[in-house]
Length: 177
Image (cartoon, rainbow, N blue to C red):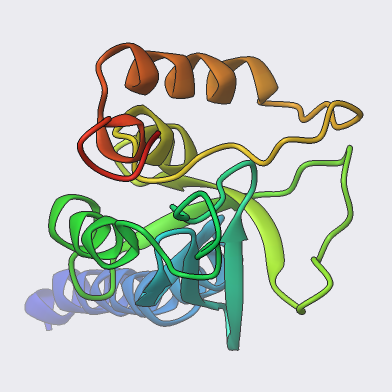
């Protein structure tokens, strides 16, 4: 009889701990993960376009302020360094199912004319992907003197750095003129 006086509170406490742990593991954590700020990369489609899963939605995301590397001159439709840029993105920035953070720029629309979502992309380690692509010469900023992006200064500086180092599209022996 004396043993049951100690066993009942212990069993009750144990049941409370089990219920709290179950709620935490199966309700609280999934709830916050569902509403987290991260999306998951499914595929690198182009040097400036990712296919991501954002919650339950699969969407194509174009990096704001980054155009694909293009060859100048009469063959302007031919992509110059595009495959190299895509490969560089995959090998240096992405592993399968990497989490990223997508940030909208309120100074431009949500989507482009082709239906891509326009976003700044941050890797989980904090790297700003749009900037990294430009500073490695794997893309270039679109020229629009009327456009003032929220991250314009960072992107412009990244492109100037690539130009001064003759990287990627700015290499005179490569795509640049």
